[in-house]
Image 1 (cartoon, rainbow, N blue to C red):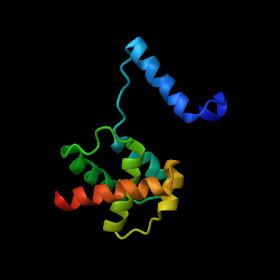
Image 2: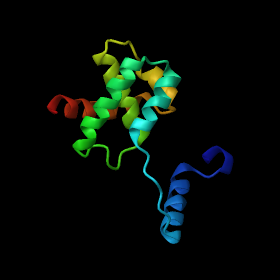
Image 3: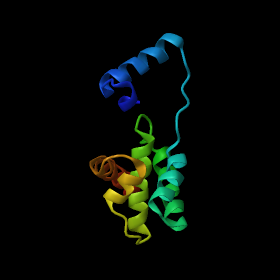
Amino acid sequence: MQKVSGVNRRNLTKYYRLLIKEFNWQIPVVDPTQCVVRIANNAGVSEKTKRTAIDILHKVKQQGFIDGKDPTSVAAAAIYIAGKKTKEVLSFKKIGSAANITELTIRNVRKRLEILVENS
């Protein structure tokens, strides 16, 4: 949208929120588990790792971590952690490219996610 409209991201999100508020639109919340399949397929991740990532998301969802977070970045971080658990070699770059987000975003979310996974 940003490229097509020529409006910077900050203004675009500002106006988006304004429209939602003005028209009382109810925007459906995207579940990160839906994003896992798309990202994993784009990255060529195994079924075992996909299932492990979804299990991780179910655990952290119960702890309330997912609320308010970008579902794509949470799903990407869960895939990375799942890859480590299943011993599938996945890089931040590969997952970031598949999810269309930066490696740094995955790294930051992964740190918080790993703490929750270890404590659950």
